[in-house]
Length: 449
Figure 1 (tube, rainbow, N blue to C red):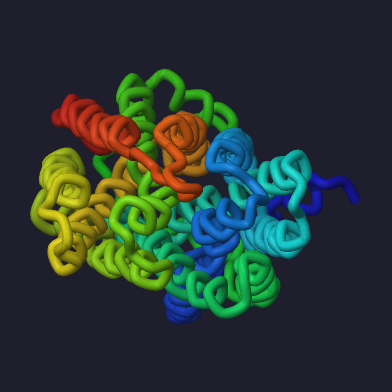
Figure 2: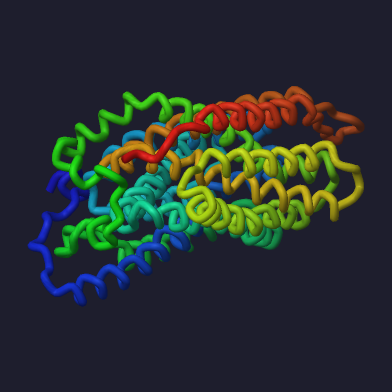
């Protein structure tokens, strides 16, 4: 059996004629699918972000420098970027349960291997492979949402799914921080790896292939939820490959990709270097620094849900007005983190709460929801992949630039390292400003009919 046939979607079954059975199956599977792609994907994040928590122990132990850690971290982002593009195109053709579960399984095994590595080239190689297999998750989730949830409910469902980012970050920044504090940096890889072995099994059991493989009608037919002309146009759009190619002709997709890349610079700057910044520049302990970043994930969950609900209910599924609101909130929190009054942990906590709320709402929209809105539904994975490759090239570039700027600002005083984060901070803030400007240019873009 070839690799492509192993991942390929199943054949369409004859449509069920019993409407009660159709309703029952849709309701049953939609709940299980949301749990798989949200809670499951949240746990999978711990296998992507573990490096963020173990950076200081690795630096203090003389195993890697900040610049070397930047190289390792960027390796994941580059392969994740390429993987989101290629896997996004593949996910439109794939059996989602097999596709997603396989990526999680391999990522878990790689994390276990990282706990044994103290060699730079091996860590770079493993973390790069991890990026590729982590890139199975987001396209699978996007396609599942497009296949199982209709137009006018997708914003809310996408918002719920986007809480996976915050769930995973919270589990990493607090849970893995506790693990590392108690058992050391190696356990920071091993525990998430072992946990995600179980998560892979759970995802396989709960996720489903396309509705048509179960004899169900398309979700837009079941919900009677078509945009004007959508149903009539379906037969004219050609196959999946034709739909995927068509997204390359949408100017808004390219602007959206650049806006997402810019906000991902800031997002992963805080995720990757925030704990080190709070430890070195603010003097917080690992647990207190982890708690600060966990706080932003709590409001991040609220932000993702609020974005989807507000854009669906108050703006008739238009995302740009809500992008502006959440962008201002994110930028306000970011400025307070870096330029707020010193020596006030309570103010810092408020800053992270604001930042998390605004950022996760923006990531919900710019990182995928808006793209799915304006792309053909048969090309949801490809649209997500195109946005993803820009987003994670931005994140990877950030990792290299930030690592270099932080290392350049390091000085030794009486045998103790001191870091100057000022140049890196301006780089991070400027990226948020650029993202907000680009997103605002899409104000008049409408959902695809």
